[in-house]
Length: 207
Image (cartoon, rainbow, N blue to C red; front, side):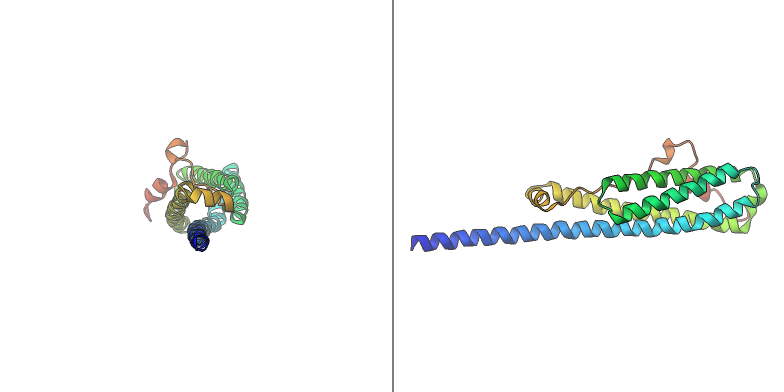
């Protein structure tokens, strides 16, 4: 009788532990999926920005005969950013890939910022309707990237906190739930080029 009770108690405890294990695993998996989905939204917005840059360069090229190096820097930075995006999309859980993407996108923003600063010296280009439209679209793209990045970082923070606390940390270690990397761009205030948002906002159509 006592043996039977002991077996029942042991089975109950094991059953409860399994239920808890499954619940914790599912919570971690769900939050990791949400974080990866949030990263995919960053990709969408980065692609939107990448697609605008060739038109921006070609529009500027028609007016800026002596600024070939600046235009080439933007094109090169775009190419590197696209490659970094493709690499990170293959494994958004890899910290090195996310960090590489952040560096590439910061470099691209810097290059565009330098181009926008040079545009100031070309009044006809500043007034060009296609350039004004591209600036508005880039400003919108910047805002969308910022919102997507914030949503991703919020999801990553929630996931990382979940995997760090007990007893989730035990399950995370056992099943390979690795810490995810925040997507942090360089602070525009720390760079020597103008902040793109400020540049775009300072330009009104027809100015």
